[in-house]
Length: 281
Image (cartoon, rainbow, N blue to C red):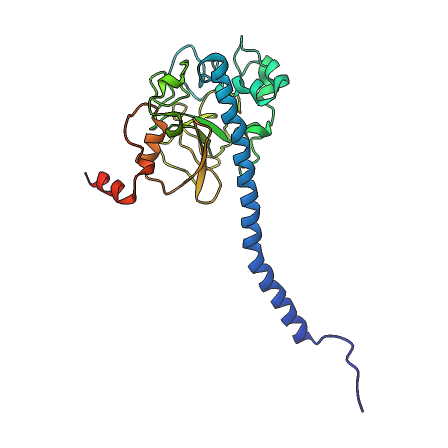
């Protein structure tokens, strides 16, 4: 007598499921890498118009936008004071005239008159790999100083308190000086138009790759750059060039890139042997 099989056996079904599970497990990391590559490309594309806007701003006013404004320094990361920042001054050149027209510079950025614009979730300053909360936070930060210190008029970066920095004030050359980078966003962020550590950072802590979402820094602390991109962070230079900087970059290289007037040979162009010899000395 012969019989006709009309279905899989249990063993055959389990084997098929196991094979599908293995294939999905192999494909998932590749798919995630492709998605992150796309997010990284979008992030870079959002830094490009910021670099172009800075050059146009300088051509118009003969200086780069002021990092932040306050009656006196150092800047405290609290919602008190003027704190109009460099991003707000670029909005016209970023093709956002409507938003720019709604900013009242006669009062604090935290005043009731400015609350609608401060609370906007403006995508032009948000990396797609960054967290979504707070919605009005900026992923991009101007660099105010090479090492960790409070934001003040004595800083050696390009975006400092109350000072108008021009190309003549960057003797190291625009292509050797870092202007803007990324940051890890925390829940106490004051928003994309706040000229505090919300949009100004240094490289004193190197390139950060993880953060304490609910940790609170002291009001005078600023913090370092960082991102959720694997292995590094985008850095926009004064020339408009955007480089993806490895999180393994020598801390001395980062500090020299941010310092607009250190006068040394660019360490990022030196070989590893040269950097090791300099470190040993």
